[in-house]
Image 1 (cartoon, rainbow, N blue to C red):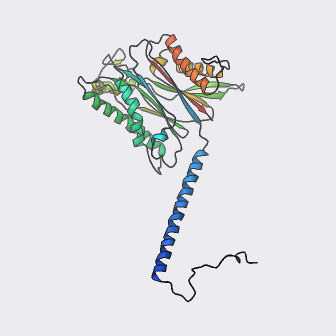
Image 2 (image 1 turned 90 degrees about the vertical axis):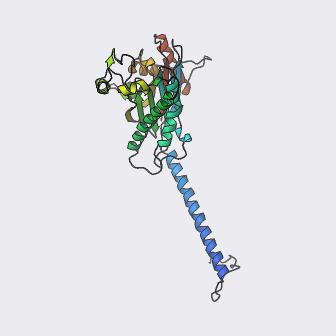
Image 3 (image 1 turned 60 degrees about the vertical axis):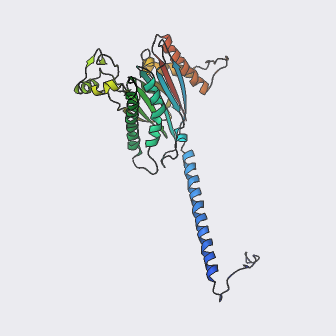
Length: 352
């Protein structure tokens, strides 16, 4: 049986012995070109859909950011912060191999709030503009270069603006930035703000215990390498401070100390997220003046595991509410323990 026997015969078929006219040939070519373009478009749409499905199916950890800020006994709040759990919405295109970008940062100003505010408003935009695009090889190397260049550019831009003022601004700021590329954490930091990761490990008895991993390196003039750089540049360290005044040896701004070896090159750390990771704490030194990193992690973990934690309405908190409560209570506890400095805490939850 002929399955196509009931199809109508073509109405304008060219006969075997009939030579098609130039006009018919031209129309035929145009139809062919159109079909080719439509086919290419269909293939492109299929490729884009497949790529989107691949990205959705990667099974990335879910990240949420929470922040708590306290002025303490200071007259002015000189800290600034940024929470962008989906930085990709600010970008036109992502590298082909990247599915998710997130950015969290805390800036601790000194001498004023202008350097910290400038860094909070501009650093991630500079990072977006410099971030690798398209098909890239050695993504890790390019991301690290992007972070280094973004810090340098942000510092240069602020110093240019500060020097144009009358009188010139003398503000400076530390910076601790967490950039998440898929499930890889990149931490870039200057000064004495810190980032720490809570990871659970199984003990010999089978129980789980918290392990605190440092994701940043502190920069102050008492550290040998920092002091040597400052002295080589012609500066001095007195009472643990640059020229007896500045407490940190790396910062954004502080134009009057740049000739003394104070630099804006951040320390970079890379860490792969695992299913055993629970949260990251980013905080200025106001927190760590009264908490060790281990104490801060244990304090947060204790609140997360306390099923009796209640919110303002007296209701038991779950999920995001529990992290929010832990973040707020950690900052308040720092003030209660006697920290007179500004305190800013960012808590980034990690859930698979």
